[in-house]
Amino acid sequence: MMRRILLATLGVVLSAAFLAAPARASTDTTPPSKPAAPTFSSVTTTAANVFWPEATDNVGVTGYYLQQLVGGSWSTIRTVGPADRFQPVTGLTAGTPYTFGVIAFDAQGNTSARSDPGTFTTLALTATPTCRIQVITFSPGFLANITIVNTTATATSGWTIRFSLPATASAGSTFGGVLTRAGGTGTITPAAYNAVIAPGVQAFVGFSGMATPFTPPSSFTLNGIPCTV
Image 1 (cartoon, rainbow, N blue to C red):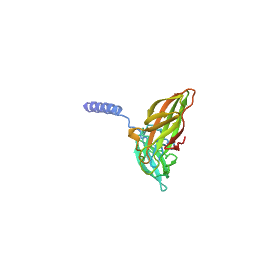
Image 2 (image 1 turned 45 degrees about the vertical axis):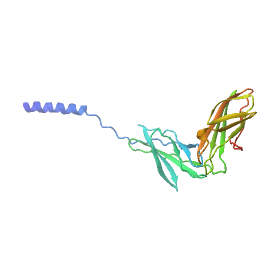
Image 3 (image 1 turned 90 degrees about the vertical axis):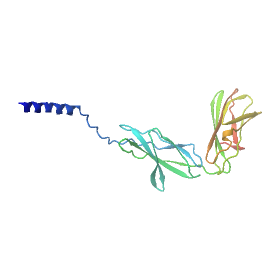
Image 4 (image 1 turned 90 degrees about the horizontal axis):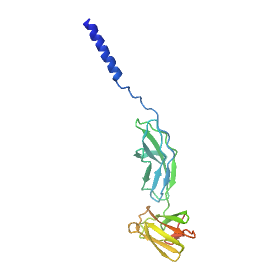
């Protein structure tokens, strides 16, 4: 009789323990989605920024392998977290094409298919620095953004931006330099911190203003050489 009671009690205890035990987590075997092809910005003679959109996963993407195609073979140059999808790459060679791809991975080590490749070509070396201009208009206001790129092989020792600015236009705040005016011409000279620009490096300059009648600034030059749009 006592034996039957002990066996029954043991059965109850084992059943309770089994019911209380957590279920074994299923193994995640689903890989993340294939990332979109990387895109590039701020390309200079020696550097560029690489960006790619977020991949998806049934549990969650935990990181990415940033890969470069060299000599026909892919190699991982950087492993980054899920939020680090904007990556600068430096030490590049002027006038050279570069190809990058991205692979997403999750916590279980599942990896996505590699993204379609993205390719850019670094800027070629030039005898003088170059500049790009973007004028954003919202009549009667405007915002002029100037990007100076040192595409030479040596550091700059100073620079001057000139442009047409009608006498009827008023200049507001300036960044990256000091703005002066003489008649219908505006001039921006460097701020102390960006008078010298290293090879392959960019400097950002600009100013805001208003003009009535509306005539935004134009004809931008860098050291007398026209800027590109």
